[in-house]
Length: 141
Image 1 (cartoon, rainbow, N blue to C red):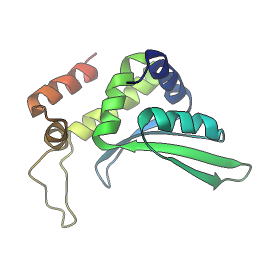
Image 2 (image 1 turned 180 degrees about the horizontal axis):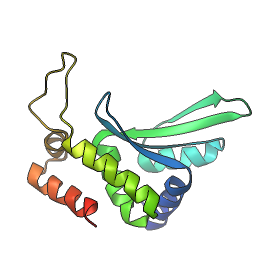
Image 3 (image 1 turned 90 degrees about the vertical axis):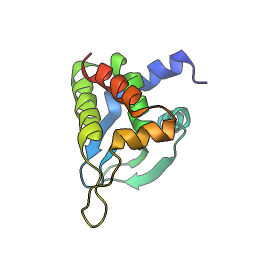
Image 4 (image 1 turned 45 degrees about the vertical axis):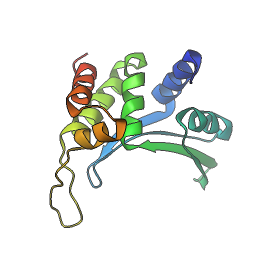
């Protein structure tokens, strides 16, 4: 189980260095961050149970990154939401709203039967209605 102080640390790191996005091309919600400090990215990666990517070379230094996608990203976004500043909360609201409402399309452009929320609810063994209610509470807080 993750310690409360680690959740606060992660919230501060995401607030300062992170990003929250919804990618329309693959209907994917993402939370992540980049830094030249590998130890910091490693700590965030460990807390989120994901991988550290890099090093990537930019013009001046080596950069490291972590990314979390899908239902796990949405879950962490909802967990961290109340600890964020106004601008980051707006990013989170927008990403969650799009993730909740944009239909999933396959390679032929056909809409799949399950919405992202229904799919996520199945993977979490909860009802879609319960998950929609949790998302709505975050979006309307």
